[in-house]
Length: 383
Image (cartoon, rainbow, N blue to C red; front, side, top):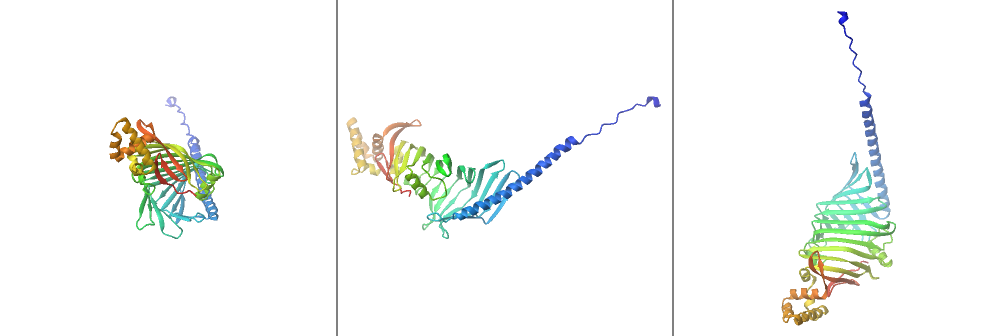
């Protein structure tokens, strides 16, 4: 029987190191990442404390009812409940208070700070009842760069509202479906002659306190550049505008597009500041559907015979009578038609997005605003 015995090789022992080594490396990396996150969280807490101390020395005070740090494993999140801010050096001083603030920093993208804040936000003189109350369904902000050298700042709000409270009853000052504000340093630095690009986007906005025309919903896309700032150190905007005037700076409106109902307008030009702080300059405005806007702009000023604009309009309508007898008289009977025809004749024919339009100068002369022959009002001085 032994002659029939067969020898079988013993099974090879399985080597476990190909499995254990990657697992061990993974555990080490996870531990190192945990240690790094807790170190970064501790550093963030120290940085916030140092920043608060520096701001307090400049009379800008910030406080939270409760502050927590989280976001493990890939973010550093700082949550501040009942955030409050008081700017004592402003003239007049201002106190802000919101419901909640969340600031997040991606560990793999440390130069981008993202914030979300919850309303309502109240604005008041320190120790006094709120003058304004703002609210929104979603509010976000982002800052690219470092706290001392920001490169871009963006604010985005869904369904924003702003109410004025210093009246017998709250008064709606602004509302909209969507609002965005973007700013970036185009050239220079925060500390040395920064040139700031500012872009504003509004959807279905209403601002009755701004002008009667803004009492109806409108959309706006505005792209501007601010030239002449000395620096961007914390200071009141009154002082900034005074520096711009002293430096011979300007507000360059590179493109402004506004739509309200069937009316559409685009504008571009440059505005400076006088020694008294008034806007001074000219924008070239192209308007389609001017007849829709004129009633809200004060069309009665155009049809008043004793006004300079009325005399120009009367001359324009007389020219219609010379071309087609009776046409000018018919336009006079229909005030709206007369105003639209007269304004069209006083401006330059143009085309805007495939529609017939009129090009008129929008002039600012020591704060007075005039669109072609129509005086719209006056802008308060900026300083």
